[in-house]
Image (spheres, helix red, strand yellow):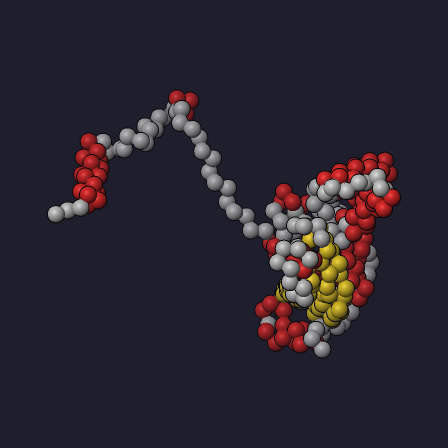
Length: 287
């Protein structure tokens, strides 16, 4: 004897068959009119295609540097596609007047005072009396990379040199702020490249890392930004960047795993396509 579920399934199939024979177009699909003005159906916008930004950069609404679209460059003489190296939301800080800087600082001081009150502290007690001002100054200093242009950082330190072997600077200390929790992560970065008739001043490799690290970051994006900045500055045969860092958001909160180290890498050009070149770089940074 058929079960109740089987009877229900057979009945539904018979109903669907009868409806399809009576109405070739199902009743829940409205008739398409030739006049768009008479079509009262709700218009559903077509889904936006997913845009994969090159080398892990954010989408245009929050684009981080360097921007890869040459049309966005304001200085055609710059060796970098984006001479400002800033997103739209932070470009105003680069060109801020002294009055605008003072206004921004006052707003930050008031915000820090509010935070102190919300965690149950007394911002008027002796130890915290100047804390809002000190913290505002500290945050502005730790994010001073928003006030630096890569074209100014590199300046004229690009030289013609007949050298086609690897150039490597390792153990560059970096400190940055995690954009998810606004707590620090610190570590070291190794930057290597193989020149293509042009070399970059050695100190500029460290300066590039410093400029990008002094912004709100995630380690994955920071690693790629450093690599692309070198690539765009001197167009070498390849660039390799490896970063090791300890994140306070993992050690002092949340999962609380002291001693954990996050390693990220970015390989461009011959470092990505040639295994021996990549292995040489990885061997040298471990010595």
